[in-house]
Length: 106
Image (cartoon, rainbow, N blue to C red; front, side, top):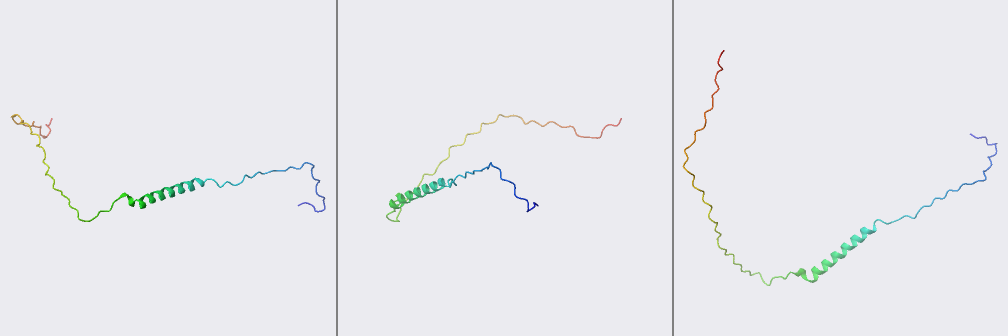
């Protein structure tokens, strides 16, 4: 602690000032989202206008009496290719395999 009876030190002749420049806050960054949403709303309004003023370009039928002929000819498959005749070859007997047996004693 300092002694309260001691006079304060003399002030120096040089005084330092610190200047802090704070730029204004920017509120940008969200404007492109608003532009995108606005553009989508405009496109949806144009589509809705075209669909509802032209009834969607689809004409309603006059009645429900519809006659449809679905008589189709029966499809025919082409003939399958013929397998050529094999030459007469006598059957081949498989080779005989040696049978395991007891080992010869020495």
